Image (cartoon, rainbow, N blue to C red):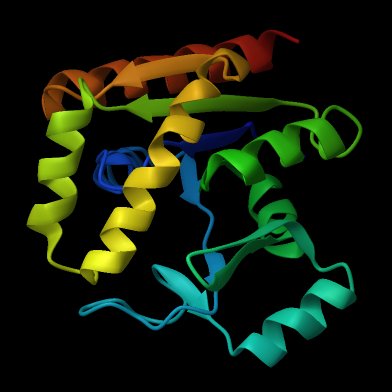
Length: 194
């Protein structure tokens, strides 16, 4: 495998998706991993681009076969990353995987360094909880119950920062993007020197 596996996590609404999308679009040496989910597509999302949208039965069958690098169930839906998808992409490029904290820590624990020789965890955090709550409310993509569930999970996610290699504060999108891009560049250089 040629690339570095970058795992980007952070609470819902922190802006990690926006940052990751721009990073991958701007950097041809990076590939974005696409996760699977059993949740319904949001407006504008397409199968194979944002997620592979699977039925619960399809997901559970793949889970039983050991196809997932990591998986988790939260907010009533399954989420997971296919091992084969990531391994294939890493042959040519570094891969950015945007997943939750549980999945990120499981990948690092279970697959580094034997399966993936270079795994870097990056957490994107809000400047404060009030800002995050405003961002979640402004998305209008979830029910009030889903939004409150996401807010309840925030404290757990933020408590895991010490387990990550890097933390990026998304107070200003341009600065957060520059910080994230610098981390990626430096970690790729480190990997090439090994």
